Length: 62
Image 1 (cartoon, rainbow, N blue to C red):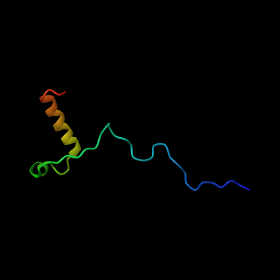
Image 2: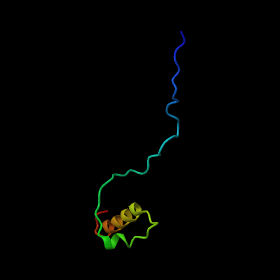
Image 3: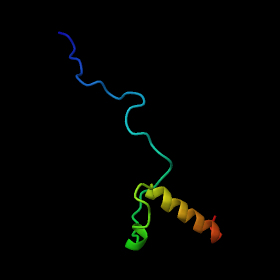
Image 4: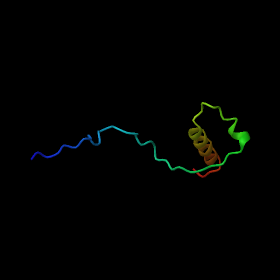
């Protein structure tokens, strides 16, 4: 008797979502007046990361 073939192909090299930078998901609450002033097509995560990094440099944490 012949061995049954699997009907699915399995994992393909390069398939799926690629991992990004080393990130951790957190929850942040922004006041509405600040949130509406971030331009709508702006990447909010990058914008907030840049703002936090700038504040940390200014305050001497990094």
